[in-house]
Length: 179
Image (cartoon, rainbow, N blue to C red):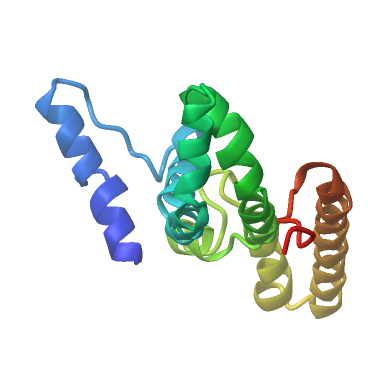
């Protein structure tokens, strides 16, 4: 995985090659403090495949009859999206939101591989999980690292709890009354 990132975002990587073909000078994407974090964000967006598959499964689950009925009633594309697609996808959105919040706080591998485990350049890729790793396994401050991990657990639990608490206002589940 690290080799792939360096082949794409490295000094002589694919991105710089494509920029060079249109006359734009290349950038040291992983070595520049101003671009390193954006490179990691791009990699995270690139890895959005599994949540997208879940969204696609949710879209396939919406009955076509609902769209046909809405079209007969005169609803346009935007109204169909707002009144049918979006409400029926809210459980999927809720699930993906919770999973991505948790995954966002656990970003470690990308930053470790790109920076060599030290958060370089200038600590711009030093995410919390990587800092916990450094304190525990580089400086051997295991107690401090364990306390930081507990803080991370509490923060993730609080944010997840807030999303669960708010879900009753925006997540719509299919009613069982008509069956």
